[in-house]
Length: 402
Ligand code: CTP
Image 1 (cartoon, rainbow, N blue to C red):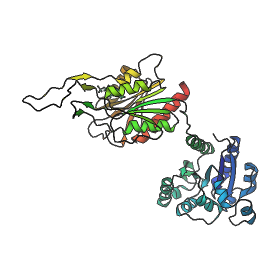
Image 2: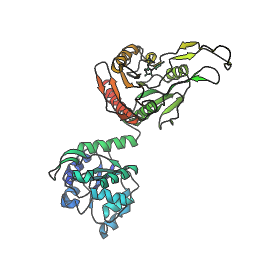
Image 3: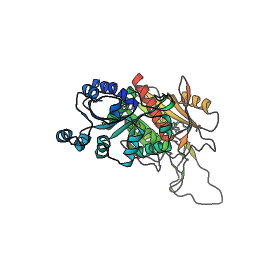
Image 4: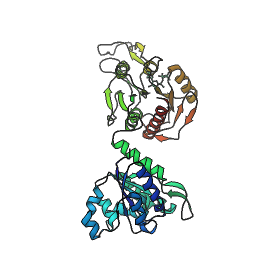
């Protein structure tokens, strides 16, 4: 993923600059082309000669250097890269990035670049947790600056806490993920995934229907997260207000039977995630609008197909991994385990939908991943984070089993 990628590495003045020679070595081993800008502060910790020898390129230091500007103007320097990486990123350089200050070559290049920027912060724990730094961090994130680390541990200043620059392999993994993503590739590239989402609406007559409280937020987030990891995703969605996720093929349906048909048509797939709250019953045909009368009408219900159980049926076309959701109001884990076995699916994401749990329509939830071997309880997470975690798990499973 890093082969022939051009990385403009800005080395600012923090003790973690001593890790930069190793970072450059590892990047070059992977075929990346590294060009360095060294700040005045950075040069206190690592010499330009070391960086030049390891990167195999000239190290740029001075904004007003006649020779540098004649050879390569600072604007060109900032743009002749696929990504700009600031490692270590000090509190000072982060603040300057936020303010748009350009008082040396590094900050000028950061202001002039039209390329993605990633920072690997490194500083004392109090500096990191200071509201000023945290506010700067939020601003940079809003501007789509990618952030890797910092991690917690012993700091060079003798204190312990968050502020250590991410380790070299972590920075390399973040760069690889970035390039994978921008190439539309990921650990699930080459896999087909089918996701169901939202409620279904079952008509009672031409103007009325049976519905449920599902918002489709979770299913749509799962589809988006799988697509972000490179899967070729088809989303079969019941009626929701959620926008179609980017990079996902979406089929809109209304009823459970339509959802079943659309799923059957979208097969085969290696991965299936059924997050839809499919209505269990449909109402047998009233072609005309029901009228009020002396007697209240009775609804003639018939059971809908179970989409998850149908797709998870053993057979040559069974997807390699079938994941269901279980919305329960009591005996959560026990019911989820029973549901997993009954529907022949591999995993069940179980969550509590009892009154007060705020799962339906809400943005966060507490889920348990129930497999044949274990029950894993996750902390309360936003639905988007649940989806990302689930997609990561699916990718890890696919790597081991497919
Ligand atoms: N499901 C499905 N088709 C159905 C009913 C449910 O695909 N007709 C899927 C859901 O998408 C979910 C799982 O089955 O992944 C469990 O849904 P849930 O509503 O909790 O279970 P039910 O089978 O409806 O059981 P019950 O309502 O009795 O708890």
